[in-house]
Structures are given as C-alpha cells and as structure tokens.
Image 1 (cartoon, rainbow over the protein chains, first blue to last red):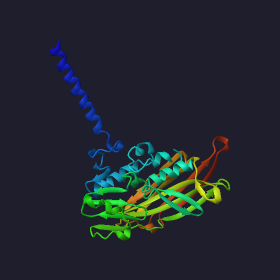
Image 2 (cartoon, each protein chain N blue to C red):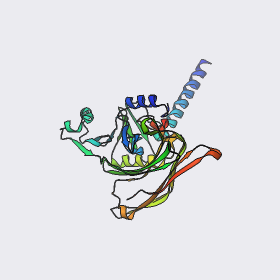
Image 3 (cartoon, rainbow over the protein chains, first blue to last red):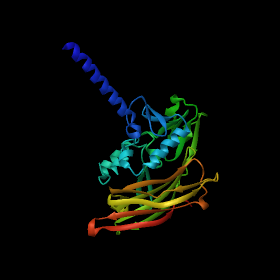
Image 4 (tube, each protein chain N blue to C red):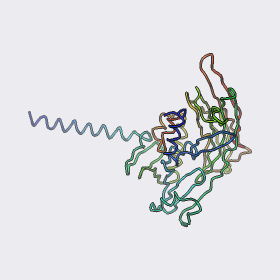
Length: 93
Length: 227
C-alpha cells in the first residue's frame, strides 16, 4: 500500500506544478506588479523583465509594443490597474 | 480612499511626491500624473524605466536618461537639473506648457467639467492625450477635483498623417467611468512626428451630474486633437 501511495502522490504533485506553471505563462501583463527582483513575463507582442521594481525592456521595439498593448486596453481600467507600478491613482480616482 | 476626502488625499500625495504634479491654472488646483497615462502604467513609483542600456527617469519637467546602463548613477537622476553634470546623463526638458487646450462647461456656479488636451514628447515618442475633470468650487473660490456621477471621453475616429508620409486611421474609442473626478485617454502616440495640418481627430468630453430624471449632462465637443 505504501509503495502505491508514493508514486500517486508524486504524480499528483507533478501535475499540480505543471498546472501552476501553465497558468503563470498566461499571466502576460496582468500580474507584473510584484517586487520580484528578476522575472520575465511574456505578452503577445513584447518581452520585458522587472528588475528592482522597474520594467526593463530589451529594446525600443519591445517598449513600443508594450505601450501599444496598454494603449489598446486603456478603456479596461480593471486590467490596467493591475499592472500599474506607479501608484493606485487609477483606482483612487 | 477618495479624492473627496481632501485631507486623506493630500496626505497620499505627500507620500507619493514623484507620482503627482500639483498644477494651478484658472483658479483651480489639479493633481496630474507627471506623464501620459499609458506611459504611467509602465513607469515605477519613481518614474523609472529601462530600455536596452538606457535607464530613463520621467518627471513632469524633464526626462533624464543614463545612456550607458550604469545603475550606480540612478541616484543622480533625483538631483536638481542644474546639479547634474555627468556626461553620460542626457536631459530632455519637457515643454512646460504641454497643455494646449483648456475648455470648461458649467453645471452651476459651483460645479463644472474641464476638458484638456495635451501633447508630450518624451524619449523620442509623441503622446496626444485628452482629459476630462469634474470640479467643485470650494473655499476662497478655488476649484478642486470632485467626483461626479459619470465622466466620458470619446471620438469617432480620425486620420493621422505622419511626417514619413504614412497615414494612420484611428478607430473610434470611448473611455468612461462612473463616480469619478478625472479620466484620461491617450488618443495617439508615435515615434514618428505628426503633420498636424493634415491630421484630424475631434475629441468629445462629457460629464454627468445626478442620475435618472435628475441627471444633468455637460459636453465639450469637437475638440481638435491635432492643431
């Protein structure tokens, strides 16, 4: 019985980790407002990282692509307020 | 927290001094973001962002750029402009009067909406933005932001002629928010300069005070974004 439970437990643990990893890949710009010292998140059009709580873009094109993403979604303040690194000004107003 | 709670709001502003610019105009006090709204989403609380080897700090008055990626120089970006002598730091002064249109419409002698248009050039990118603010006339006749039932900015599309010869068609766009005192829309942004004389986008601003049969609507229409 003990021998059977261990592989099942390991399998369930692996599935859980895989599921969590899949979800985090889809976060895009929704959740970069963390204080992670270095993390890389992907949007549909650009790649950036967050270092010491500031966005770091690889180049001007990546920066402009992210600006375009925010521009395209600027009417969705619920979405954008979650990526707001500045203050919670948007939610306050 | 609510902007209607002045004391709490001013305390908040004092704790986030890099995030707001206090501006006085037309017997009114505005607390504006130091940069276009879409850029504000990308800057951190100190106005910092890094693009390649460029570390940029955006403030209301100027844009500072460390050109060689040397993070040890970031503290220099917080010094007064006239004290920065490091040759690896570029300083681009903002046009202080970047607000080029200011119009008002009154609900009453004590309540009004303000429509503003701004153009900013930051880090080689031009931003065109519209703003609608509701205000209440308070002590000493000073206008201060005050929430109203609904604020709205919209346009029905436009045409942008760029200096490189390309033409961009703007799709209709609307931003509105209930129970708000200030909303923004970035109407257009680009790294290529715009030929204003051949471009057009008429922006509309609206404020609603009250609800149902008691709702009063004030509009400021056909505000030309490119002029």
